[in-house]
Length: 448
Image (cartoon, rainbow, N blue to C red):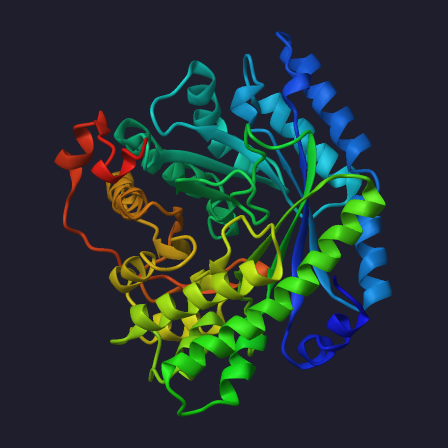
């Protein structure tokens, strides 16, 4: 049982260590909204979201005040739009944006296509519309799943997404290519992720569901400061105990929101999602373990320990830990990562190695604005390969900052932060990407 004592133990975390509930995300099934008339579909989508999510923000604010726990974001995730769009999906996107603004959420995810094995006509229409939607809406986030361990890698989709990211960057160049910060390409995308830009409601989810994302890098760093010089067994145990406390609070908030909204509780996602705030950094946790700087030798091993210990602590605290639980390494959102990247101690190649053991992948990385679509596709293919071979979720959210070169800075504001533009290898992969087709599923996919 969760009791008042669990909350009291978190007061120092909240006051001094940047602990917060990063998001309450309401999942909504939009399949009943589908119609042959796209305008009618858009109307149904707007009506269902505004009715279902009418009290979401106020409920989150009430819980925040009553328990004294910061809840940073209130968000919505919906059924992948390609599954409900019988024609042009853009009117649906505009309806989603209006609905998100009407109910007052921070972001709405689900402008999504699932293309790991192939693409329907609806999928193709949706991905071609992404640049326009990302440039003409404010709150909509988009994701595309191009690979899975069971299906392999859809290299046709990989090739297309390189061009989609480029066009999105160009259409939002006046905002440091901000549109790309709302667009993520996945391998092994999960159906209950509450975090943006990748949240959507998968086919196996209920009609409505509450998923909560918890974060606390500052809490973990503070705990490690108390055990300087201790062996890694002690480090792992300390992280597990800290993750347990954090997850218990997340479950309390999730169940409270579920009860008050009369919507089923789904999962708690215990992800150490950093912010640009001082002391709220995954990179600084790794440095507290003894690294001179994140990006140096030992970084991947330290991150593997952190990710594993966080998951172990979380599953002891809740029967329903899901999403992407672990450690995120978004460059623009982590003060320590920003510092290491700006000084040249953290490279894109080292980040790629780190993604083999973290929760997601290459996240919120600014790259030179003249990086071509083929190179972006190559980066996506590499990251997808790590995901399918290791049977884990990986993702690419890169921002080709139009007009910027390596060493420049882009600034997105808020939780999206700012980032140094990182250099990218200029070695061509054009002939590789041009092959298309599908990279077969790995042998370890055959589990039946």
